Length: 436
Image (tube, rainbow, N blue to C red; front, side, top):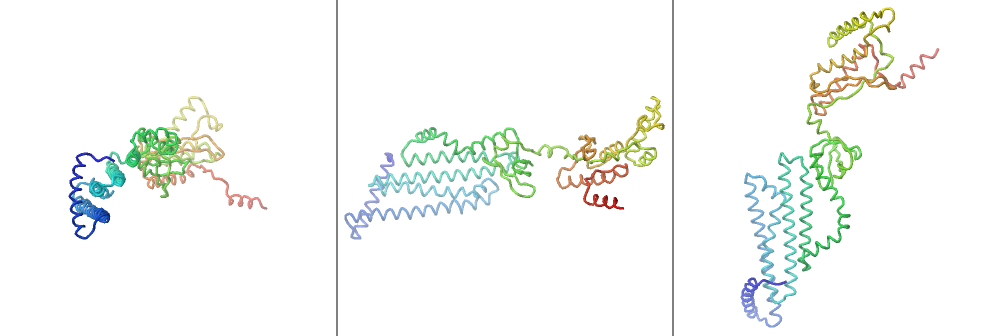
């Protein structure tokens, strides 16, 4: 390793002074010849090591103790993160290395092979400390950005992970270049030749990076989003998006770790649209037994007119039906199927709709309807479709339960029966009824 001319002149002058003074001191102690040379080199080395340790202690004292106290008292927050990530503790190692680099040239001036090896070791150590300092600085910078309101839900961590990988790769190549004496271009060329192996080793990292870029560019997933991914058993809030994985905290407080690229290659449900909307959907059916559906008699209509929510509807509908039957000369008194009639299930539908519109917990500005689905072996489904104003899970479930509590209880007033699968008790009672 070549020493530059200005440094060489400085080293020569300091070397001569130290060698002359140490030689004189050791000769006064009675040493001479080879033993004097060894003792001189050893004593200078010990003094240098001790002084380097003192410089290291002093730099840590200044960087960590004094500087940390100043940072704690400051009002800014970004420097607190540098302290938390121990950035200054890494920087404190740089000053002793500069000191050792200078004095090693003096101590081993007469031993070029040893000098070259030690200078390479110091330079590699300097690169390693610089790498640690940069990584800690990036970690602190990442935390600063992640707390910005506009960036809280962005996959900042995955971007910084990629930057750390690139910086680490560059520093490793630089360290290999210093230790072997080869140009960094030589190692970059070797990496190019081993591209296939690199792609195989870093396949997950590359796919994860591509996935995180696409997630961010298309705004598919943010930190804090409620996502459902049945393939991985995930149903909860996204807590972390990294280069390789997305962490989802399920509602049972378990953590599901999903590969980042899976959000591109597989399907998932993001509930953010619901959370940003004006309501949370209620979609549930009540199955009515088909045998309980019938035309309403005048007596039944008179009874149902007592229900305030649908009394006006019954009057209006009955007038419309009577006008239609009279106009078309249809006499429903002769035979029930002659002419139009109101049905108990139809009035029940209108009651549910009126009840939803009168409920202050239901958003009237969003779709509200009650529809009849195709009959099945489970009866005729009446589907309630509306949106709750409250989106909080606990409140939402309470609103929906209260709603259906009322609707289940109201069916009997319309002479309707809710379908239920026969239970063991039903079968037992039937058998008892058949016995003589």
